[in-house]
Image 1 (spheres, rainbow, N blue to C red):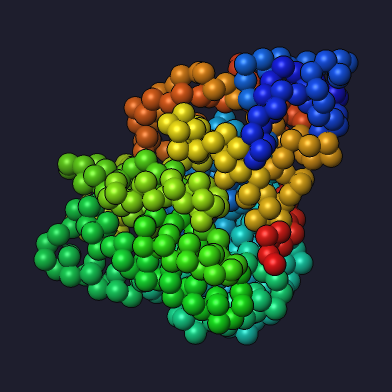
Image 2: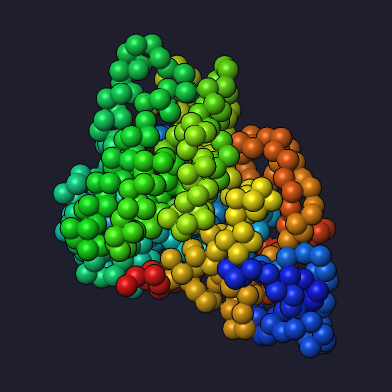
Length: 461
């Protein structure tokens, strides 16, 4: 089937251009000046709207086990919600448990996702058990289209890796061209601070933030950068939240090191004031790293403009307030970590455009084009160009909406952005040429999405 999207402003990292887009089957067939393309089986009028590459959320956790429970979005519900918000690709994390192999873990996540996704998807691998077998299997993962491996300097006893283990994994990554992704917080020191708080009777959700100070994110980020420097491995800092960590990344990048970083909408818009909401409301905002003082936010926006922060992902890891977040009543350490936002990333970053924090081109870069290149999907994804997958979002920049749990499509009982008034809204979404979201609603299928075997990081020098 052919579809002609006409009259819109086609967005790229260079900005906006008036053009028409012809889709033939699953691919973009042509991008041309208005009026050149005139015939198609279906015509979509995008006058007054943006036509942009589908969003790529490079950090999600669907059906993730954590703290005796699991995140409540399945691959089906989570990818459907993502589509509603203009995201047409997710990269989720396959979680290696201690004592298991990487390849058996990857097989398990394939089983979860296969035939259950509304949009296309790929995987990163969480490495929590570094040994000879794991190091050998990293190469097989790369062959299977998974070239990025996440490690943790936090969560001792669960995901935590020692500096020595990180060094070994980085050496292996350097050999095979893979990227190490790092959760950079000093988990050993944090656990001590948390234990001291509980012993003193300080058990409310705000203590989650107070016992994970930004200095310990900055320290861990600096340490990870030095380990990467010693080994020559490329490093990607996930969910960066603090000015101290950003300064370390900026210094490394200025020195020519292959260090990259992402931030998330929650760190741009929410703060420790949300964690301190009265009663137990602050539990809704517990994530790691924690929400920071608002004084960090201008630095993060600046980092996005200067490319010291290259990507905006969500770290979407939804736990219901009732029964799940409530596990931590009386001890903030037992609150499952995660904030739901896969549906709202594109809108929240467009709000940054409205506020003058980002240009249109930078919006497209951080949400689509850069994650495509960073994780080996470009030019199949992340661009409106002939030959690319027809993952296309038609976006109405003038529409108004109010974010709320009553209207979102994520499988979670609250919204971290309840009552946020947003300018801009997704109108229509195509995934590989198929309209999956239209003004009339969701028209896709949870069997539509395909696994993406990814190439290596395309920014490596």
